[in-house]
Amino acid sequence: MRNTPMAHIIILRNGETLTGQVTTRKFSIKTSYAELTFKKSEIVHIHFENPPQFTQDEMLLLASDVHSGKAVPGCEFRVAS
Image (tube, helix red, strand yellow):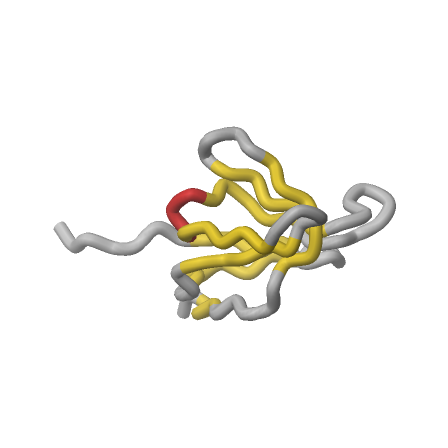
């Protein structure tokens, strides 16, 4: 049996989805109190600003912590073939 990586899903603002692999290892978010960096394995999801639901970027962690602010650009994604 081949060990295949878990597929990640990106949902675009228009509702379309991309399936593939996020290759970025860490993500950062600038909050009102600090710039925080988390490993990809610690993150459940990232919502990017999309009013009215999300007035700021939001990062939910496995530990159930939610951090809001501005996500630092820099996500690499490889689309499944």
